[in-house]
Length: 256
Image (cartoon, rainbow, N blue to C red):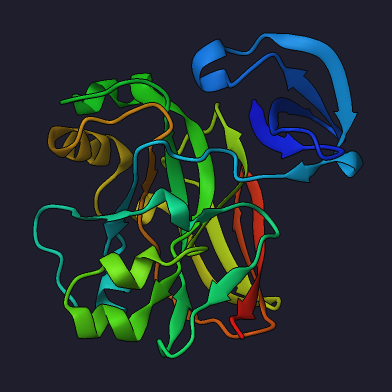
């Protein structure tokens, strides 16, 4: 089941279940009110898709979680996952622009599978990982690469406004163990991998992260990007596609 968050005719955001070319409107936020429908159907052509979730608490990133990406970054992750936080103010939705701040040097795309947490979770065992997940969406962990190297930590480089596109939907029935991820910039294929290539799989990530932080409904975990990260520039369009979910597309605009 694909869940979308959308706006139509200037109304407040609502939620719907994607049904071919329409959205079946939900009675409320499925995170808290389940999947009861109102009976209303809204054509996709009449809506603007929004970020499918705005984390009330945190976006958790995972770095260096594909061996080939670790090699291209000339970095070593160690035995434990490398984790960091992005602010929820960095989140944008489909077709919203990634805005490049002035004077920060190179900015890269990083296409990723993202986990949307559906329930309060602490110290989750790997065999129970699925019980705390609402579903999966697509993310682009945009990174100011020069700042990342200069600062020696990642908060500023990954935390700018618009540096966390999410969408276009949350897929609640995805098997995340082996899905294909592709990232294109202006149609040029930059990244291609399967989630089966992750160093730390999703059950391990849920177990590790929930031992550090209490996970709240709506929290998002970015599971890491494969090799092929590259620079994005003003006027380009970034598309991240994950089989079973769809395509997240965002234009790139330099702040002037």
